[in-house]
Image (cartoon, rainbow, N blue to C red; front, top):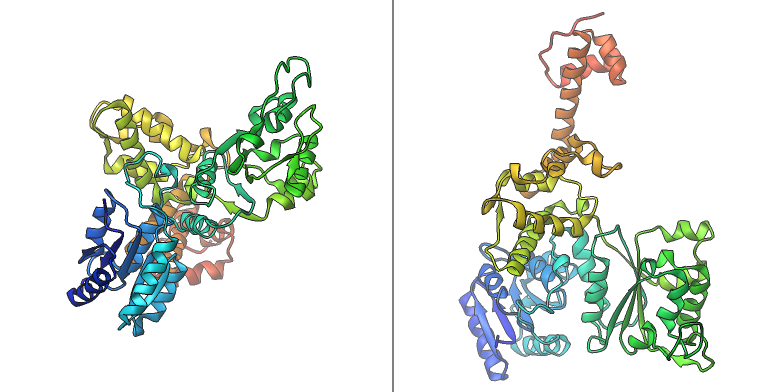
Length: 471
C-alpha cells in the first residue's frame, strides 16, 4: 500500500525536515527528489496528499500540478514556494493546488496543513483499478483542466449540473466523475438517454408505474428516480424530452417528490440530477420546445465539454490510451503510431469527437498489419484528409496546418507568433496574387482587397523581391 503523503523536493534538507516532522506525527510518507520520479510512481499507486516544491530540475511544480490534476482532480497537492515566488504560488492555486506553503515554513503549520488535506482527501486508489479512472477524461488542454477543476469544486455539492457539448465528447463520463467524487459516491449512479426511449414509455421509465396503470402493466415497477435514491440520476439528451414530461421533471426538482404512473401516493426523491445535451437549450426555449423554468432549474451549474478539435494537444495522449485499452481487451501488445500517422491524426477534425477516436483506435488495433501504424494504414477518410465528406462545417485544410504550426511554436516556448505568421501570410498572398496577374500590381491589389499604394508599401515593408510591374 502506498504511503499517504508524498514529498517532492530536489532540496535534500527540505525533504529531511518534512520526513522527520511527519514521522513524529505518525504520518507515513514517501520522498522524491524530482517531479518526474513522482510521475512515474503515479502510474502504479496514488497517495492521499502530495506536497511539492515549485522550482526543480526537469518537470517543475506547476507542470507537475497540471499533470496530476488532469488524471487525479481530487488529489490534494500542496505547493511549497519561497517568498519571492508568490506569483507562482498564486498561479498554482488557481491551477488547482490545495494550498501553498511558503518557505521557510513552520513545521507545526506544515503538519496542520497536511492533516487538513488528508481529512479532505478520498481514499487512495490503484491506477489499474477499472473503476478508478475515467479514460475519456484524460487531457492536458486548458479547456479540460477547467472541467477537472469544476469536478473538484463540486465534490461536496448536491447542486444540479447541466453538461453541454457535442456528441461523443464524454458527457456521461463527466457525469460519472461528478458522482464518483461526490458525497453520494457509495449510492447508485443511474443513466438514462431520454432520446432513446419511446415517448409513450419514457414517463414510466422515469417514474415507474403501479400494477394495472395501463395495458401491459402486470406488476408494480420502480422507475429510474427510485433506482437512483440517495445517488445520482443522469439524464442524457435532455433537450429531446417531451414537453409534458418536462413539466413532471420540473415538479420533482421543485417539490422533491413524484408519483408513479397510475399512483396516488407521493414518493420522496433524494436524488441529484445531472442533465446533458448537445443542443442549444436557449434556442429551444425561444422556439417553445423547452420549458424556460425547467431550463433555469437545470442550468444551476453548466459545464461545457470541448470538442476534440478544440483540444488537439490531447489527441496523442488519448490515442495511446485507447490503443492500450483496445490491445488489453484482445490480449495483445498495444500498437503505436508513426510520427507521420500521429501528425495526421492531430490534424483530423474528428466530428465524432473522443468516441470516434476510441473507435478508430480499436479499428487500428484490429486492422493495421504491423506493430507500428503507418500513415498508409489509416482509414482513407483520415489518411487523405477528406474532412469535407465527414464534417460539412469543418475548416479548410490550411487552417488545420496553421493550428498545428501555432501549437508547435507555443510548445517550443516561442513568442511573437502572430507577427511572424502574419508577415508570412501577407507575403504568401502577395506572391500568389502577383503570380496570378503576371506581376500587375493594380490588378493584384484589387483581387487581394488592397489599394495599389498599400500593396506597394507591403512589398517594401516585407522586402520582397518580385517581378511586379505597373499596369
